[in-house]
Image (cartoon, rainbow, N blue to C red):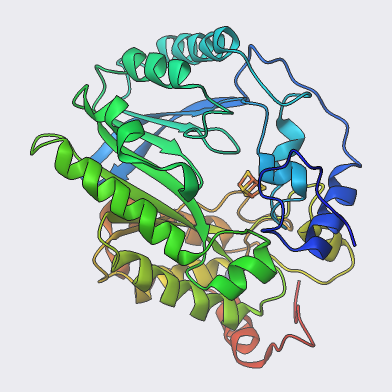
Length: 366
Ligand code: SF4
Ligand SMILES: [Zn+2]
């Protein structure tokens, strides 16, 4: 029986078989990156509880996710982008922030209202980002309107959120929940925590929101994964609809972001895909879920990555750009009628897949 290395803090929580397979897959990669450079940075616009805002998205290079080093999630290849050795100093992290500010100054007329920081791990885990770095980063962005930071639920607490809200920054914690169904999260995604942990994190955010007073808000943005491996298209769609409904019902969770799975290198999904055992979700499934959940009590958005490609969510190639555009429209306006304006012959194929695909014959199409 395999064992994660003894210093891995999640020891005993994951499933040995998945972790062993994922460690073998990840060991095929060889990459190292400069700890003074962010993994990625870009400008965009985003729908927030206060309307559409300009955004600066930062992927900090913090040494990567500890869970990924134990094996990690079946679809996640981000560890291939992290720093060898596993930890990044305060000075190096602040250098990364400087690179991001320079990128923004060069490419935007005004500072972005919304700052989103992802780490391919947990920004609120102090072994990844120290309290000193967290507070310095909060100071740096104190004049913006809103922050989003990514974290696993274990590390969410009201005091850490207060580092941001004390500057009057509305603060959201992005949690990669993936699905509200524990069995799917454990067995298909290989993520160790439970929906109850997510609910506890939402309660911390709700408490931080209360502490912050009436002018400043704190909350949770749940990230869900459409079509983890081993689910058929229809199982994935049904699980997503019920997950969105369950998240929206939790106090403190105001936004759900549905991420259609794409095939990343050095993952179990990649191995399955290579053996014809996995097809990324149809964009019709994304549209269907958004339309079905439009009246839930949360903002529901989706930004399919790699749409139209074989490794990304796709339809028939002919209509991919059109459906992607409708999805982006929906993100900003939350109006399901945008999907009535798109159609294609391949909808019939998608409907057939939804109806006929079973776990023993999937994927029914490519
Ligand atoms: S999805 Fe998140 S928790 Fe899972 S391995 Fe990737 S970075 Fe780690
Ligand atoms: Zn089509």
